[in-house]
Image (tube, rainbow, N blue to C red; front, top):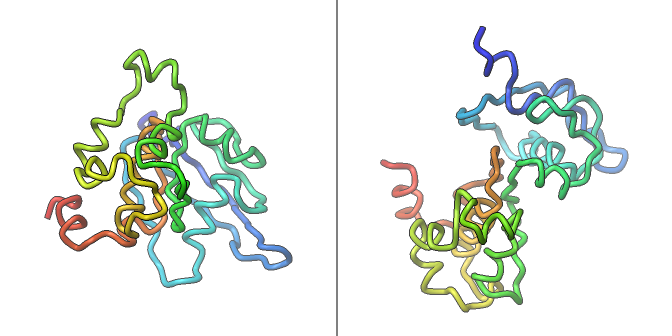
Length: 185
């Protein structure tokens, strides 16, 4: 058995999640190895978003969630993010009064390391991925289209140099041409 298979990057075991008194996840199990792309598929309401929110510490949950061998269940979302888990929420959660550039800067996990060029991603990389964001550099996030906000949220997450990225509704609001170009088809 390979080391990656015996020690997955993310291991979720017997995960149960709740919204108030509503028990919405019942014993979810999954693992994600480094370099793997995993997709949760299903109809609306089956728990895809809740699973991601539980991993990020945003809903009440019980069970086990291990990231790189460390139990993260019960930690705050910002602590989980600092460990290397990136999350792109369905609602985008951009800062509407801040510019595109300012929103991207907020994604940087370690500004000192980033200023020394130690980050995997920088603003120029984001603008190369999504040239439309470069055109909107000084535009407040709140006036961007839905697709532009989705691009911004994806890029802001990448700016934190995560080891694992969870994207809830990855193509939500993106023009079909952008989705096609991003998927390589």
